[in-house]
Each structure stands twice: as structure tokens, then as C-alpha cells.
Length: 232
Image (cartoon, rainbow, N blue to C red; front, side):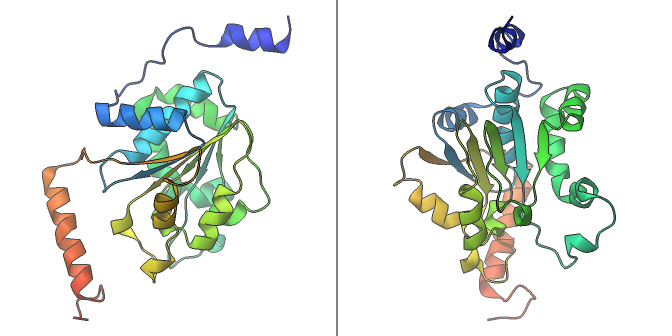
């Protein structure tokens, strides 16, 4: 039996049964992801951007459409990652926990732990992506609004053949010192011009209604002050 025939027999015959079902808005976005190489997902906190990216990544991995899930996320912190204890996975754990939480929400923990331990899920910090090319992979760029223009250009140029990339971000949550340094909005604009790219803004919020109202107040506060309570 050839390797190709063996793989075909191992593929699930029916749809993957996830523990959380996508809403209509997310299904529309999933179609864009499946039909494009790079998809930009924007939306406020709680709109399900990362959950959706994780669901499509797992779906393609279990169906053997891709062989690996690559996760990258910029770290904007006063404490440099190099000074944190442990190996790379342990250093990145605080930043990757939201991704793992979404995986566990979507599918049983034993299977998720298995694909993480066997290397089918790889953590690649933004700073470590240079020089890599990701083939047969699903790349999730989380908290992308905190990627600089230089970092974003480097990230998208890592995409290899038979791979997909989903870039998740919220323009209202930029933590960079200069918001204009964020490369996320640029990608949103060029997605309309570049073939095999798409974008979608998720509008349905999955958190308590008070969160959206409070975030609006914070945004108004930041627009009127320097972020420290001092008027501009």
C-alpha cells in the first residue's frame, strides 16, 4: 500500500465534530479562509477571531489537508522573553495560552494534547520566523495589530505552497507606542487588491454586553488623553 493510499484511508469520512458550532458570520469567514491563501480577520475583543482560526486549522489538520499548525504572536511586554525561565515553549506559554484555550474549547483535550506533543502544533515567535518557509501548514497570526510593518511583511513572506495564513487583529487594541507602526491596517487595505487574499470583520460579540460598552469608553478615553489620564 502506497503512502498516498494509506493517508486517504486514514482521512475522516465525515465532517469533524467540534464541541462548538460556528455561527453564520463565522461560516462565511471560514469559506473565505478555505478559498484564499491569506485571510485577515478583524473585530473587537470577543468577536471570535482566534476561535474561528483555530477551528479551521484543526479541521484542515484532521482532514490531512495540511500537516502542521504554526502559531505566532507578537509579544509586547516590559519583560523581554529572553529573560524568562525555561525553554522556548515555556517562555511562550503566557502568550500562547489563549490559543490553547480555544483548541480545548473546540475539541477533546486528549487529542489536542497529542497533536501538541507530537509537533503538529508549532510555536514560532515573530522574532524567530525570519528565514523560515512554511509548507503544507496553517499559520495563525494572533494579536496581529501589535505587529510592526516590518514584522508583518516578514511574516506574510514566510507562507509556502499548499499553506494558508489567517491574520487576527483588532485595530482598537494596538499596544505599540506608536499606533501608526501597526502593520495590521495595511494588510486590511491591500487584501482588496491582492489576488488570493480576503478579509472579513466579525461583528457578533460572544462576551457580555457590558464588555463592548466598556471598550468604547476606554477607546474614547485613549483618544482624549495620552493613556495615563493626562489630557492631550
